Length: 442
Image (cartoon, rainbow, N blue to C red; front, side, top):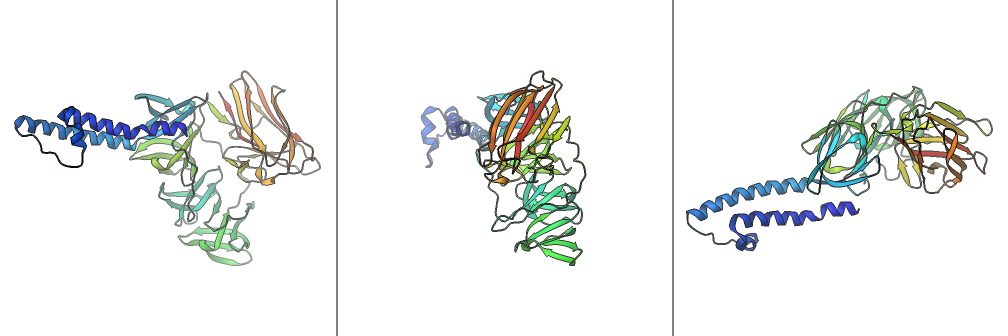
């Protein structure tokens, strides 16, 4: 990205200029080039020269400290909820929460309640092949080696965040490292499921996680010790509990370069690590140099999937009613449109009408809308966004395989926002529509 090149490229020049400046100040401009040569120069003699050299060495040490600090700085691009981009070097992150950037040599403090995201690296996650992926019910994913955990948690260890225990009630699915991606494994309401690498599937109850495998009890097969190297995926029972109340305050959604994405409250920076308190209750310390992006929710930004609709109308074409889902497609999979995966959003099926009370407290509604990839190129639906009952956005004939369609609607002073997905040209067949990243801006 241009902003990344612009903030990083001058550093070598800055380092050389700083060192030259210190040498020049200590020995004078005539000695600058000689001092920087690898060969040793015969030093001048006399008390004054010795004292001057002492001062030079002291300043050179200070220079080395300054260069070490400059070398550890991270280029950052902060994006505000008003879509202003602010580029600089990351100086601090505190528990307020707020970040501080050095912009053109001047400090600038940015409260996180006014930010959409902070980008730290222009790269995509590159998951390792030998790490397991623990997918949480809130959409988080943590990658690492399973090292046990017992009957109440999964213990995961990673070079990015050390060790963390994920409570089993927070875990939806575990994907084990395999040569080929595991087939879709749907959760059962009451039973845990194991998908073996040979595609065999068994149901039962996980009794405990061990360092090399798990203890599993099946009604048909009895007590089993199953090694992780035999498994492709594990799906924990979904149960029917109502979703928990979203945590209050500003929540950071932190993405690391090996594929970990975790939502948490920021505690601050310590020793090159970003200290977090996860939404599932565990402390987590992520290496700052492995982070790609930090998104924020709360404050001036609210995701619709964190709200309860004021009114829901789900009308089947024949007799099967598809219920909308938060942060998942209607089939229970991650939200994916046109090659992009989204953590937040609403998965719906035609015909679905969701109304949200705004009470005049928001300015804008933003989203990407499209047919989820789980239906391929099938599906045909009409989508409409209504503000106080009047259409503000419409798209006819939304089909599978297409890129997401950006939605931006002014809702200043509005009382009700309604998202409508209606039957298209193919009845209701495969109308799996995602309102991805659907969010309100105050």
